[in-house]
Image (cartoon, rainbow, N blue to C red):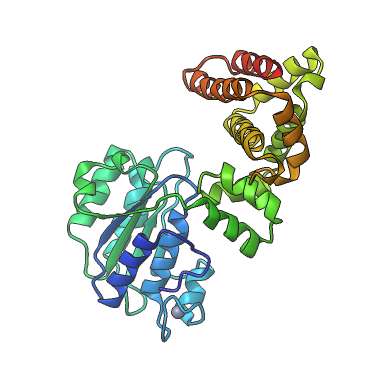
Length: 327
Ligand SMILES: [Zn+2]
C-alpha cells in the first residue's frame, strides 16, 4: 500500500499490505489506538486502496476512484457521521450503515463503511450493526475506529480483526516534524519529547495558540523561579489551573526541563538536552541546584500529576508545586 505520510506502525501496515496483496480482505476490522495516532488516516488510506482502480501501488492517488475518495465524494465510501457530540444513535447506524449495506456498490468493487469513534454507538446502535457484521454482503468492508476496544461489545470484537496503532519513537516524530512540517530542529525535539510518540498530539501542540501561550508561561517560570514575586507565582498557578486541556502538558514541560537540568549537572554544556534553545538557562540552574534539589523537583512534578488525577484542586496542586520549585 502507498502510505505517503503515514510513518511508523510497521506491523499494522504490514498486516494491511498482506491482506491487499493476497486479496484476503475480510469484512470487519477494528482500528484501535489513542487519539492522535492516525486511526482515521490509516483507515482512509486502506479504504482508498480498496476502491482504487489504478495500476501499481494502491491507492494510486490519480485514478477516478482515488480522486472521488479524496474529495469525499466516492459513493462507495461512507464515513459515518453523528449529530450529538458524544453519541452515535441507533437511527444513525440504521440510516447510514444497515440500510445502505444491502445497496450494491455503485462501482464494481467494494463498499467501505468507516465509523470514527465507534465506541460512541450506544448499546442499541452496536446491536444494530452486529447483524451487518455477522452476515455482510460479499462487497462490504466495515472499519470501526475506537480509542479503546473495550467500548465495543465483545460480540462485535469477536467478529472483527483488530489493527492496533502504537505510539512512535521520539526520533520518528522529530523527523516527521522537521522533514514534513519544516519545524526547526530545536522545536521539533521539544515537541517530539512532549508528544510521547503521538504525531497528532505534536501537531496539535504546534498549531494550538493556547498551548503555545501555556508553554511560554511555563518556560518563563522555569528559567528563574526565584525571580518571580510570590503573588506572581500564585497568579501563575491560578492561570495554569484554568487550563484544563493543557495543564498536563505544562507539567510535562516542567518534567523534561528538570530532566535537562539533571543532564546538564552531569554532563555540563555537552549534555544532549531536549530544550536546546534553553541551554544557557538550564546550565545556570544546574550550577545553582544540587542533585537532591533536582530530584525533589522531579518528584514533586510526579506527585502533582497524581494529585490532579485524584481530583485535588488544580490550583492547590500547582501552588504546592511552584512553591517547592522555588526552593
Ligand atoms: Zn487509485
